[in-house]
Length: 121
Figure 1 (cartoon, rainbow, N blue to C red):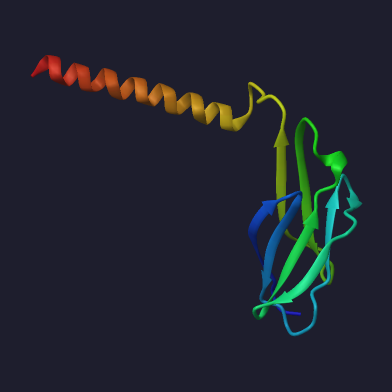
Figure 2: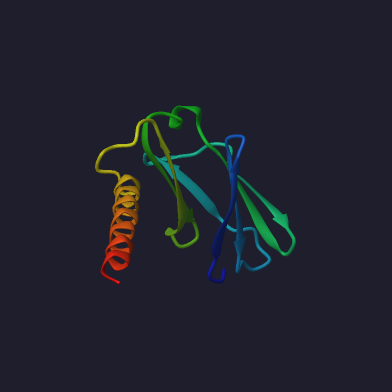
C-alpha cells in the first residue's frame, strides 16, 4: 500500500466524511478510534478513483467538551488524520476564545492608532 492522504469533505447529519487518496487498487485498511475504542459503522467506498470514508459520530460523543476521533491506517498502525467535536460553553482558556479576544483588542488598538494619527496631523 502506498502513502495514504486523507482530506476532510464534510460533517453532516452526524456523519463525518473524508476522501482517501494515494491508495493502491486495494481497499485501504482504516480504523477510527474514539476514547481508545473502535467506532462502529465506519464505511469505505470507492469513489472517483479514490476512497470515500464515512464515520458515524456515536451519539454518546455528542456532549459537552472536546471529543477527538483518530483515523488510523491499519496496515501500518499510523495516524492518518483526526477530527474533533467541541460542544457546550466555551471555556475561558479555549484557544478560540483567546484568538477572539486578541482580535477585539487589535481592532481597539487600530482605532486608537488611527485617531492618534488624525490628531497629530
